[in-house]
Image (cartoon, rainbow, N blue to C red; front, side):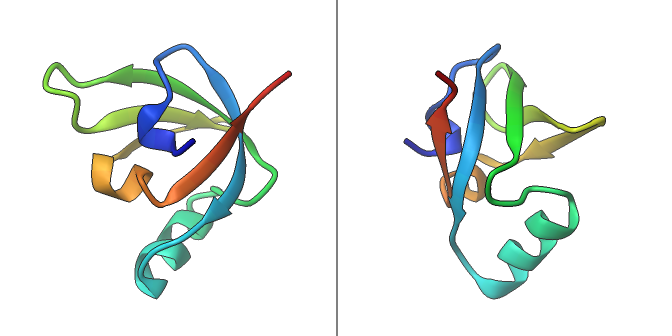
Amino acid sequence: MTLDQVPPGSKVRIETIAGEDALVQRLMEFGLLEGEVIEVISLAPLGDPLEIRCGHSRLSLRRREAQGVTVAPLA
């Protein structure tokens, strides 16, 4: 499953981050690291962007950026 498919209110663990090197670097600088638990907070009315919580930070990601983040649901 990728991050853009996660419904609001769900918590997931990041498995992998793929995409252009610059995008992967930027996401990692924001704290999106493999093994990190994140929560999808909300989607914009048209579905783009989505807002996530990573640690104590809130981030907005475009849907195409979120498609490169593979996640696993928490048990």
